[in-house]
Image (cartoon, rainbow, N blue to C red):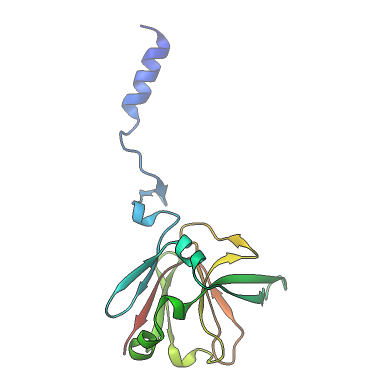
Length: 161
């Protein structure tokens, strides 16, 4: 047999049979796909949204200025109230817990949110679809502070006291 055949055979034997995509050195499952479903947790249920689901909903946009670069960007997405009913927010929603990045969590009291602006889940910035491990941002305004964005959002949970 030829040398090329032995090289190919050796390559096939040394390559794992199931090569899963890698993220930070470990295999990840389809549930952790870069087009990850956005998880919304309430006391009674878990709901999941695909980016295409958000594109079909009523859209809203807000223009924010980046404090570092002073450049304006248009963030477009869906109001959180469309993903979680207003009744659920009123009954269960003492605070909103947002899981982002590599399992970091921020908890925001509903009383700290600015009553004039509603939090929104953003999936496009300047008309371009967000991509990456968790392709969603949350844009919200706290009382007396400028609007802020939280990137790489994976889960939004409504917490009761």
